[in-house]
Amino acid sequence: MDARRDMLAGRVAVVTGSSRGLGFAMARVLGRHGASVVLASRSDADVAAAVERLRTEGIEASGRRCDMAELADVEALREEALAHGTLDIWVNNAGASGVYGPTASTPVEDFARVVRTNILGTFHGSRVALPVFLGQGHGDLVNVYGQGDQGPVALQNAYASSKRWVRQFTETLRAETKNSGVRVHGMNPGLVITDMLGQRHVTGGVRAAPRRAAGRRRPVGSDPGSRRTTPAAPRHLRCRRVPRPHQGDPGGTGHTQPADRTPPPPQPNAHERHRP
Image: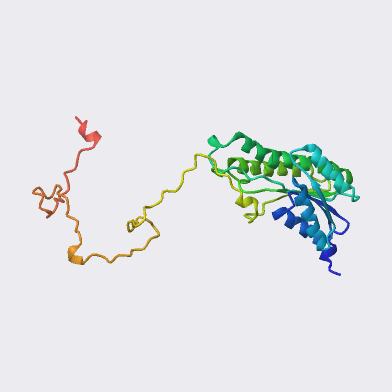
C-alpha cells in the first residue's frame, strides 16, 4: 500500500473556493493522500460537479454552497466538516480578483467585493476553524497569499492590498497560536493559470500603450535593444564634427593654436601681503 496515500488518513480537510482552479487542485491532492475533503463555493451546481469528479477518483468528498463573506455560511461549512467526526485542516483559498485600473476610478462596489471575499472571508474562515483547533490541541490553518502580499502593485490596489492584509493577518495568527499545537501557514502559489486569471475587469483611466502608424518604421537606435537594419553611409558622405572656435582660435578657422603653458608668477600668501 502506498504510504503517501494514507498520509492523511482519518483527517478531514476544508478547502474554500474549491469547485475549480487552484482550490480544486488542493482538495484533490489532500484527498489523494487520504483526507476526507469538504469543498465549498458560491454555486451549488459547481460544488456538486466538483464533488462528483473527486468521488470518481476514489476520494471521499462532500461539499456545500458557501459565501465566505457571510459568517453563517462559514459556520455551516464548519459543521459540515465536523459531521465527519473531526476537523484537521482548513484552507482559506476563496478569493476575488479586483478591477484593473487607478484607485481614483475604481468602482466602490468592486473594491468592497474584493474586501468582503479576500479579507472578511479569510477572517471568517480563520475565526470558525481556530477555536476547534485550539480546543483539540492541533490543526493546520492555511491562508493563500497572492500578488501584492509583499508590496504595492500599481493599478491593482484592491486585490494587492487585500493580499498584503492576508499576509499580515496570517503572521499575527502564527504569533498568537505559538506553542499551542496549532500550525498557521501562509502560501503564495505564484501565477497560476485559472479561470479567475482571465476574468479581468478594466476600469477607466488606464492609458493604452501608443500604437505606431502602419508603415512607419521605428528610428534606428530609438530602441536600446534594436539592431541597425540599414547599411551605414559611405565614409566620404558621413558628417564630420567641426570644432567650435575657442580661446586659441580667435579667427574661428577650426585650427587651434598652442596654448601658453607658462606658469603664472607665484602669489604672496596672506602673511606676506600683510607684512609691514
